Image 1: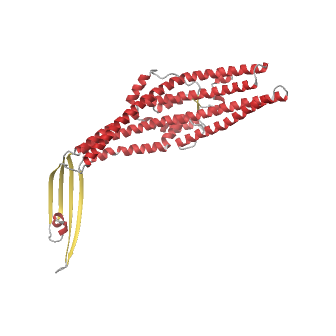
Image 2: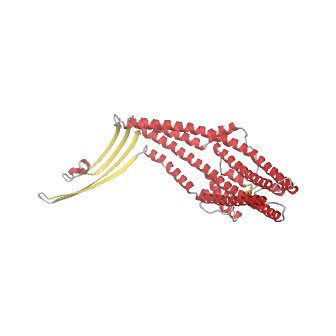
Image 3: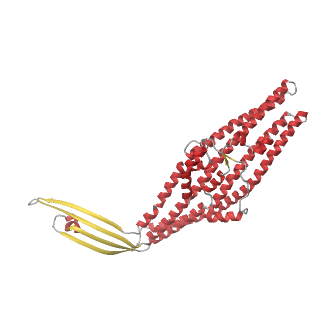
Length: 457
């Protein structure tokens, strides 16, 4: 399902990396994940191993040919020393004519192969989302780190001005202490933000298998729009028909059904065609334990149709039927649970995207309002209507609004991908669409705010 797109990405990866020089882009990170992620490699090997179940089950329905060779030597010295050697070659062919149990086992193996392919495709889809989560979470930590640096600088300026006012006798000790406390708190937040950024890069390294240079950020001009269609039911319907995990569970149900049929078929008779040809010492052919008693070679050929009707197997067949029946019931219950989960997650993701659209707009407006509030508070402080604590609170509100805005815009991106994942339509092209809005010269210290709001601030 993803092979062509992944192959294209692997071919274009060196070109993309060359263009981006010492920066990592979304697509370069994804191509590294596809090429070097150990979980991806393990999932691929698991998929290939499960595919081998089909030829193994088919082999049980095809002719079985075997060649045997026996050689013997006997020495006797009862009266006269006598020594004789002999050999025997035997070729046999067995072809099942009717074996319902083997046939249903083969059908179960085909369903298992289909499930393996869907499981692998679902894993690849999940890996796309994990790549995006790691990438954009790292960008979020960088933007939050930049906002915290700016907040620290603001509190540092406020602390310096407050000390100057105190030295001039224009403010009291409480103002200095309040400014110092805000500065210290921001400094502690900076340390925590730096750690979170380092942790995010470490998560990227675990995902890609190699250290990552600074990431290319995404423009604030990325369209923030409602999903299309903007009704939840079409998304739920698509998820119920296209969700890869749900489709894999349907294949698992087929496996359980065919396994039950195979177990029940063990009660049925089997019919087998056996062909044989043997040439060699007559003693070895008729009675190998009496080899050496008579000499001579002979040829023997046979054609037999073997009929077998199981009558009693100690209860093992009935037990396997009951076990397979319980497995079938389990698969049905698992599918029902997964169906409900897919519906829930699809609805939640749809609501999350629409909520994020409003959140981004509201958070952006909050920044504008907080900037205006800070300016008004500073003006009030100049005329004596406000105190230093009011300014510190207004500054803190402004940078909290900035952080909330960035959380909302990255949340919008990831929730959009989660909605597509549940609908079964997520593919590498979705990452490519996002990559079009990357800003090669993105600098978190300058671009953590939209350019127009930064100018206003």
